[in-house]
Length: 414
Length: 147
Image (cartoon, rainbow over all chains, first blue to last red; front, side):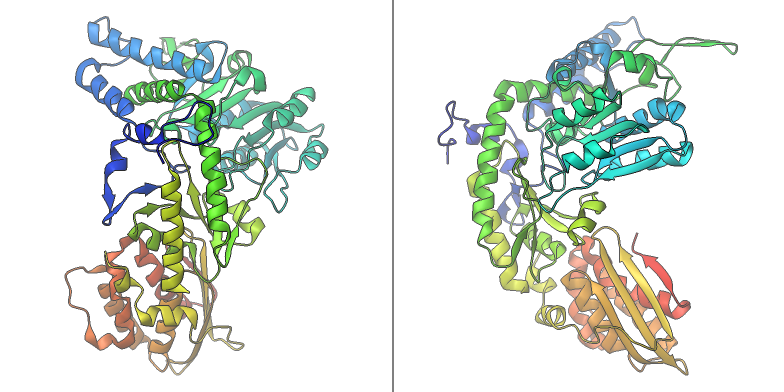
């Protein structure tokens, strides 16, 4: 299919695929059908080239030298920060901190925001859907401070119970930390409603946006969250780079997280003065090439438009749901009405691990396992699921390949 | 990679109808094994008398490779001594991990697992039951993990 039928401004998926060199390769003798985008998305040539060009022609340390390369590297790095600011509509680049990724961002907030403030008995609210990266940093913080981590329940569709959330928001709630989009089930939270309720009660909020930014437009000012974290490699950028957005007033109130170069104004053995935002939270030489690559990924996404990407992916989701639904013994795990473009499922008498191996033999790449969301697996009473997650370059034909490969696995194993 | 080499008939059969599946009411030794990577759990119960495994059962859930491996192992170790089991484990381990070695014909039905070595990420699935059995025999109630 050359273009998505029915879309007003038809998205030419075959043309978009040409931007991704890896999609042309064969895996085990079959054309690659890469359906593991929620784990990590592939990089377009624009990202690969931006990183390579930086390494080839502009590499030097940032914010240090007066020489030409250092100035060029600094300019490229800071331009990437401006792109990230624009991408999520933060009000200033001082609110954009480059880190290794979402995990590091949440750990920073737990340690630099939470640790000095939280008292025994204070509460941190997360949902039952969270990725381990939005659970474990808070558990560490609870061990350090005596605070208590509480999880808002979900229902059998994988929808977070909003009424239960309102009831759990109490006088001791200090932090609400929620995934915008669930990585295991694809559930999209009506995040603004959750954030509004927290803000009305003066509770600080963090949004794990790792699974949101590749699929939908995000405006942190509209959301009104205090923190928003995302990773480059889930949105067609490099690994090892991500962003923590923090509201300037909140960031200003926080002590540094790590000490080192770049995060200081002056150092003596008597007294060290910390740097301004955002550099105060970027100790040491940052991942300069990664940030530049992330900037290129943002340009790439904005060049297509998040609305068009979202529309294409929702069509893929609808098609996948229909094509897989009649496979005997297939059960979808996660059936929330508002979902991002992934399907998580189990197959009677076929373990997800075996399914993953058979699919790989057919060139179909999916994720199998607990998806770093073991509480979700526990809730549904399954040790693991198979998860096919779609990105902007996936096609209806690849979903047909997925279906064929699942049927092949059933023939072999059931 | 050849899938037929991994999912041989013996493997598929032992996955569909695992032998010695269930609990052993009066186990002298038992242990739980976990593969955190895939969330698999395996519990092994052994009745050992005079250094010989008289009976063995296993339960839990896992992939075809881990279930079939446990089932095949349970048949292979019944009636054997600790020393014999240790030697058997060493031969199985060599078969699962050594690309260059000839498949040990003396392993009997266990040789059906030889295809696993072409799939490195699945070696843990096949070896979980052996680690768990070792843990059971070395002390009751132990827990092991593949990680």
